[in-house]
Structures are given as structure tokens and as C-alpha cells.
Amino acid sequence: MKKLTLCAVVASTLLAGNAIAEEKPTINPWKHCGIGAMIFDENGAAAAISNIIWDLGTTAVSSKVSSEDSCDGKEVKTAQFIQDNYDQVIEETSQGSGIHLTSMLNMLEVEKSQHSQVLKAIRTKTADQVVAKQATPEAYYNVVMASL
Image 1 (cartoon, rainbow, N blue to C red):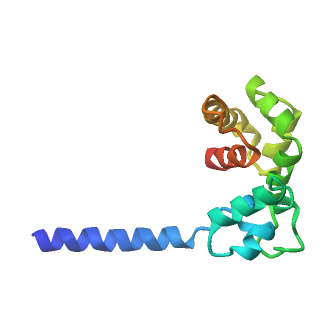
Image 2 (image 1 turned 135 degrees about the vertical axis):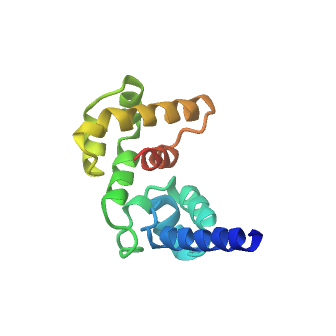
């Protein structure tokens, strides 16, 4: 009986691993794009640090030349939007609504019926970051992507 249970656990773990492996990975432009990604393509943390040291990550989120294949799509466009409009996005997040937040969610193709639910999650997690003094455009982007 123990062997049967062990086999079932192993089989379900392997199947779950395959299902996870097939999902499209989330692109974090600060780690997967820009000069940092070119230099440290196997080390996302080093790439992010490099990009932030270089220019606070602005070229990472706007670098179609250096990482054209991996740095395209709605996630990267949203990251660029957050980087360019960070002060307005943070202010509107604290208020709970605004044109920048609506634009951001539309860029990510979030259904209008889900906007309030997603914004509530973003507001809660962002408030925690602000209190912990860890609020940055990249951290905000990560919150948004985790809230979808």
C-alpha cells in the first residue's frame, strides 16, 4: 500500500512539473532585457542589478535592439509604461482609480469587470511595499503581474 501511495505521489508530482513547464514564463524586463541580460543571460539577479546600476533600468524596458526576441509584447510595454509614468501610477494606486491605472490594465488586456478586483490586490501589495520602503517601478510591475 505504501509503494502504491508513493508511486501516486511521484506520478502526480511529475505531471504537475510538466504542466508548469509548459506555461509561458513571465518576462521581467529589468531581468530579461537590456544590457544586463546581454551580459548576464543566465543570471536574472545580476542582469537586474546591472540594468539598475547602468541607468535605473530605463534602457532595459526600452531595449528592443539588444533583446528584440524576448523583450516584446504587452508585458514589456506595460513595464515601459510603469517606468515612464511611475509617479502618476503610484498616486492613482493610492487613490484606487485613474486614467493611468485604466490604461495599464487595458494594456494587459484585463477584462473591465476584473479591474476593481485586480486594483484591490495591487493596492494592498503596493501599500506593503511603500511601508517597507521597497517601492520601485520594477517592484510595482512585479505586484501587477502577480495580481493578474
